[in-house]
Length: 290
Image (cartoon, helix red, strand yellow):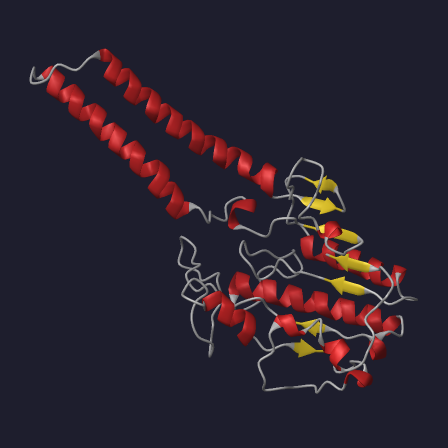
């Protein structure tokens, strides 16, 4: 988040054109939710478990050779190997213990408001904050970027949506996100803004089909008719260009946007679309990322 010192916030949204921020500076990760597993499993196995196993085998082998009188091993060697094993284990325990509080927290502007973050009603809280922002700026042009944590793993949903979908945890998360979109649209309708507000809903990439729990439940979704899981060559990039967008059927008519299109639309085209249609971008500073 910082470049030269702990207070410059050079990578913070407030340093990149936004006037208000509420959300996660990192992202939603499995490690942020207790019991949801870890995205670092492979790295831990390679960098920690394998060295520990090698160290343990070395200790046992050297001890056996010394007991059999086949090799003279100084005590310092055993001490060094034990210290190495303790150091590796200590690094692992420290990482597992401190990762959540150091990385999984909620901020409002430059202030940390929840550390570590709680998933309880998290989507409801983000939705309510977005609705308040819209109400505060209903009389002026505004830009709201509501970046959902769903359906990225760790999958989560509130009690109102948990275990309601036939598609299990993934379906629960999708239904809760769908509810949130409906809440935002209702606020626009209530304030009389639905006819002059462009609502753009899109995704950053395809599904991570390798994301499977220890019990075999698929948490990474499905790419369906789309190609490539995100980890393959150009997988994420293709997803960024490939995903169709959805827009409100009440979009401003002066934009001249059709309700449906078969053309691929890179997200990079979004800022230039109003200019292409001769619609002036907002000059007021009411920009919010959530």
